[in-house]
Image (cartoon, rainbow, N blue to C red; front, side, top):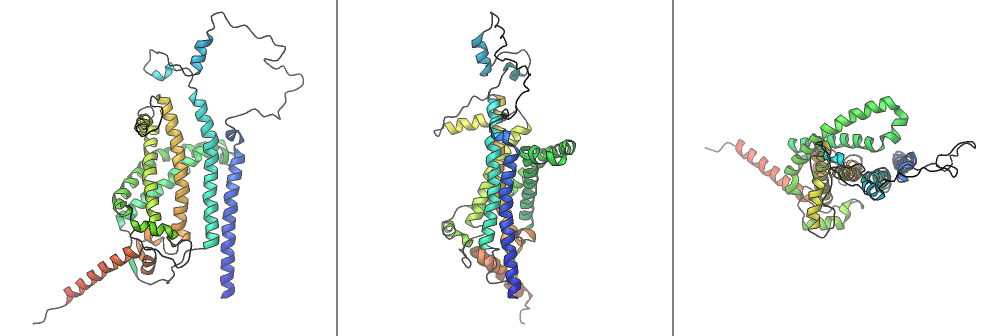
Length: 389
């Protein structure tokens, strides 16, 4: 028995170490896959040399043609900086020949956004693997009681799974937009990758509405349980009992960690939904212009006269940033709800949790619910008793 336990612990550590290595390998592989993107755009390869007899346009022996006499340097400088002219067609955007912000947006999207997103995803995997290696699976200290208590109702679990499944679909299809050409394209080939990406596009556009519905349902059902409490400070001070075995700070239906997750998902989900709507219906909204006006009232100095193209660039960038941040957070949430904690998945699986699990992780809520159950049981017994004649 002891030997089997030692083998189990050894296997657990091996798996955690493998996950940590996989996380680092993910970051290194993805970073190496797009060197041009991380170099602020495509740069010429210094190792490539032309043949000895090649004629280089613009070389020292080439006479440059003179500019025509009517060449207006100042006018072309303004055009390069984004001068907006007048057009006779309904599309006013056509009046701007050059949108210089596009280059800066491309460099940001293909550079820092991709790079930091890669390291953020890899860091989430590594941190979870190290935590599992050191702490292991958080077990029910008092063992299974054999009795259950209702943790979540059917409508609560429906809202959660609607939000969860739609988020996973959106995350996978969104990651394909950001990383697919570097990771999947070399593996699948152009045709299959194009088909997969087209399918992902349609899924992303339509599943987004399911995500918004799940976000609204869970907010309405759980906002009352996720308001801050002074007990949350105690929970945070003790690390929620996650770091030390046998420590179980009291909490109600949701502890401080779950409350933080709730508000991150709600606020992040609202933000990503608004930017997503502006991308689904391009050039129809001015979300960032209006947001910047409000932020300037509290001390910021942000541009408010954004063009429709700039609105789209801000929306695309912000959508990617918030999406990557939420994915990193949800990775940790999925771990705790499945592998990381014994008995936790039952809460969203069947809706019933073991009584000892409830007492250890949500003691105040469990005590309240057990009193209700006892009261209902006593009332049922009383109703079955026939009064004496």
